Length: 407
Image (tube, rainbow, N blue to C red; front, side):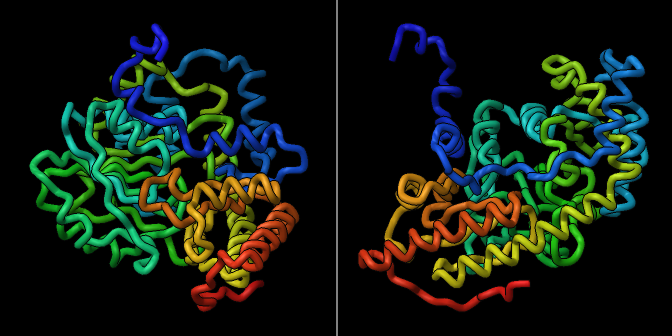
């Protein structure tokens, strides 16, 4: 440790670097490498949305907005939530807060409710930021393992043993990154039955809500018993292909919004103004493009699941988001070993499942937010890698069922 490192806070020192960035850095310097690692749409933001962002700058909208966000945008968000997901936040002046992406929303939600020592339940595998954000807020992350035999769904019996007198909140993230799991209304009802009488706040990260391939997305805030205790987080990055615009939002009870706005105004002031104008256009006239992108993701999803199962890497069929999470346990390699050898031997980057928590061991995450040509080339190389493992005698195929028919 250098003399300067002693000044870094203990909470920051306790958090390891992101398990995803390591592979991105290698890929960026490796010639002819293919990446299935990035969680970002390969589509460019639809033109009408880009044009509105440009036009807003031409019109001179280059100043701060309200800390809460443009009133016009908050009104559109309120209408969008009602129309698309039957979530009722009519008092948009006090119930909606515009943020710098869903990432900031998660951070300020946790910092607004967590006291030092409070426990936050986090189903795993999970998005890489949840646990660090809990720690930065002074809380204690408590992992709840979800399993492929349960379609990676969170079950009531998994939650109950984890609840203690210090439990303050639980983070739900469905459709899930990295597994692609979703929770149906019946699934959520079981969770509601155990949470409704407890003083536990739900932070519901629904950034992939529009990328649900079977049935309609259901939020735990749709249950009247949970509405007041749920903080709904969403944004424009994934559905509208607007990652670089950095725009998200929170819908919640006025009490929570007021507290989160306090944190938001001291660290951010307000979200980018041109992004907010672009987002208004996205909500008013962008949903047809969302539907087209979702159809294309769905085609790639089925192709990728089919290929992994055929090569003997058992793959749960994701119902949402744009990731598959195949098991590589039959190869005898750890997630990290598999990802590293695949990268150096076949020049394909995937993310080891352990980047999403300990329960991700034995899995890899592959994004299908890439062109079908890139996906085919990458899967051909992965298939060759797996075949090489078989010939080396380290691969023991377990079963070949659960195959999705390729469209």
